[in-house]
Amino acid sequence: MAHNELAGGRWFPLASGRRALLGPTGDVAFLSELEVRALQPQALKLDALSTERIAELYAKHFLREAESDGMARLFEARVRARNETLDSGVSLHIIVPTLQCEHTCRYCQVSRAAVGDGFSMTREQVELAVDAVFQSTAPVLTVEFQGGDPLLRFDLVKLAIERIALRSIQEGRKVQFVVASTLHQLNEEMCAFFLAHSVSLSTSLDGPAHLHNRNRPTPTRDAYERTIAGIELARRTVAKYREEMNIPSSYMRKRMKERRATWL
Ligand code: SF4
Image (tube, rainbow, N blue to C red; front, top):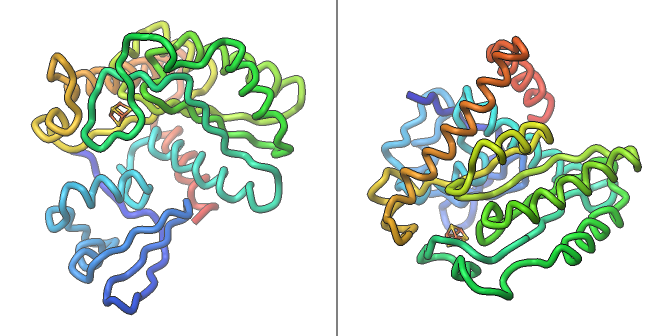
């Protein structure tokens, strides 16, 4: 079972009796005394928290799986993007290649049906978005693809990443990519491309299968199973790469921990 840990953060008492937890990513969570007691670093009691609260704490990087390189990379991207904005240009850029999504989540404000026109960028618009990213003077750029589900328009994501990667070399900038997706469309071709460009994949599970499938309806009612399949495919791809390159996972974890320690 995954071992959870609490990322660093500072507590602030509020007049209401609740407490604000400010994390290294700049995110804030407002918690009751009961919840604060459940979040003691040496004795986490997640059973005492609601599913919604746990999901919020994961999404805001207060909670993480201790051995998860993927979560560490997302954490790294968020912290770096936050800090670099303070003394250089805008470093975090979000591109929404399409609003289309196969899900109809009850809390979603943006998704549109996965068929039909007018809900996706054109290739020309993607190129303009790439130009806009490079108007920033930030030496390190984080480009995140959101949706809808960006993998429904992998052709546009690929176009943007290829253009940005090339231009970052020409301009001597460092760039990191994040794709936020349900992972339902993820296939081996996409995995190979993302691995080649060091793209982090970000996905969400609302909880166990029954809860996730209720919150995130799809015509086939298997949203949870398909997201899990996407996660496993991505993990297999990374594991195969490590094996081929002879990189022990313990080495990767050690490096991630060393790098995280400098941010906290
Ligand atoms: S998966 Fe994301 S984009 Fe799609 S409907 Fe749900 S919240 Fe909206």
